[in-house]
Image (tube, rainbow, N blue to C red):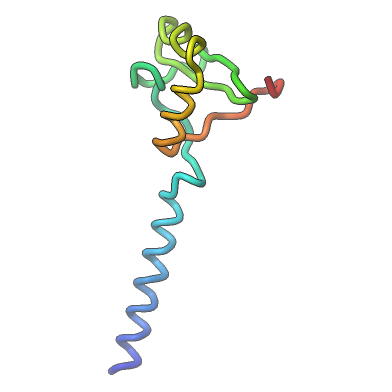
Length: 90
């Protein structure tokens, strides 16, 4: 009975570790929201910065991003979002 409990607890801890690793910001998630207004991204609207491509929900969000990209890149990082790499590495 005791060994069965140990096996069950071990399995539970292993599954919990896997779930934690999958949600870890270090791995990052794909961008789905605009960093400026939070709307759904349009892959036709983007800016490349520091070798990363950032997508936006509308044309009006590009200029605020370009004025202070560090602010928005930091916000994305804090949310666990990893931008795509720029095709040209710009």
